[in-house]
Length: 417
Ligand code: EPZ
Image (cartoon, rainbow, N blue to C red; front, side, top):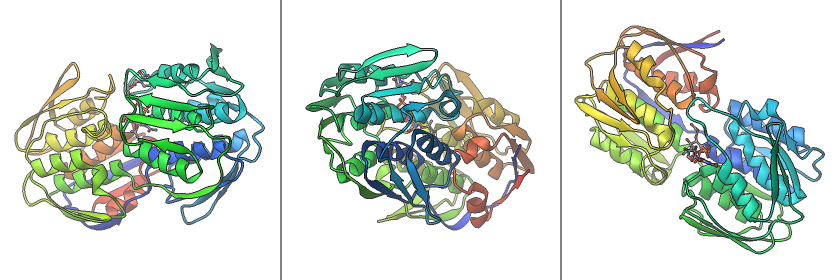
């Protein structure tokens, strides 16, 4: 199994290009199921989760034509299997996003329940409740969701917890429903907004995406379109934190600062100098970072997908900080691995108290989930000596060409087979 070997100590310098967003691409690929015409997607990231998604869509019967310029043509003229099997769903929870589109277009779907995950129980009850509110008959059998509806009906749906993929699944389903659907307490994440932009380009009637109330007026059919996937704000944030931790100077191209307010504010608080242009962000750090306390919450608050990276920064920062995780109940798996590198962290409930140390020391550590593994790469970049990170398949799920990009910025990093 591949590992990453990282020699710490290099200050990151230079420019890299940011890839398309994994968490926008995954639902948008599923939007291709809503029309018989061609949906062309550009700026598609080359990631393990994207290939898993394309395999699933191909299994269902979608024509998939991928070119070497990060674009794909999708055509779901006719689907021969209205199901997402456990074998594919178990490797990627976001497979649940085929449920709404298949049910809305074909009136029937059979999708494996995603099951548990390293960072939390992650139920999909709100996806199911929302579809039931739109008139679907749903029962769970042998670990599968069986859903049926002659035609979904518009409904007012209040989600008592903000859910990103729940909002996306219901928004996609509502585009072909009879009448208007109102999603209350909807997720406001930029990826939800990007999906809405793509659906509107396909002829959907959607208002309020990006706010906590989204209104979708159903239409008979959707047509083909071309859509460019937004930049990955979490990949952007990860490289910015890496630059801050190594007291470096970097410029990230093809990205947007307006999706990262909470993250940039915390980086400035840590002492970073940040310059923003229309499609690039530059960061310069000329001192040891100051410790910054963070508390995760739904957008536009501080993203949970940046929590582990900021914990790594606080491990070597000047001072004491509190890191509070409010979204997932088990998202501190990186703590024990960072302690192996010499970090001083105490966890109590959903809060970690981090005392910055002068230095970390290289060791062998293990990746447990996508963002935890990214935080271990960051810690390794500043640790003395060599760090070896095992189980890096987690990283390949969400970071395109990570060792090439870090090498481009001067890091000493290599993949060990
Ligand atoms: C999305 O997951 C992202 N994944 C996650 O990114 C991200 O961490 C998360 O949103 C929060 O921002 C994708 O977009 C593919 P949720 P999602 O439903 O939609 C509870 C990464 O690192 N909940 O917003 O699955 C749930 O348990 C990944 O790229 C219910 O109770 O997350 C959690 O506590 C990790 N019932 C909270 O809501 C439901 O039906 C938020 O989860 C649905 C969710």
